[in-house]
Image (cartoon, rainbow, N blue to C red):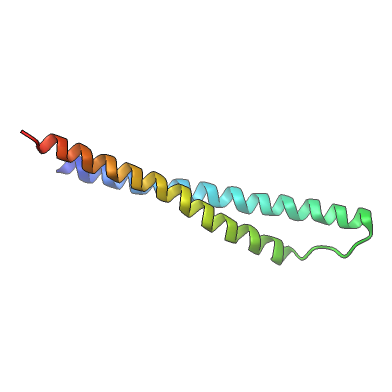
Length: 91
């Protein structure tokens, strides 16, 4: 039972780390996208993009995608822990 609890905690912590990693990736992509849009706007003599709009979109995409990826990993890990616990209990 202690092993199952430790593995469950491990998968949840791994999910949090994955969520943070993917969220950070999307937010940093948003910053790069803003910089690119800004340079393109200056080159083409167009109005500059609004950073809050670009970052808001990047954050929204980051939350959605990070939740999907981390959720899949955590669910897969917890299913594996449960399956392993059942096999161990079988005589």
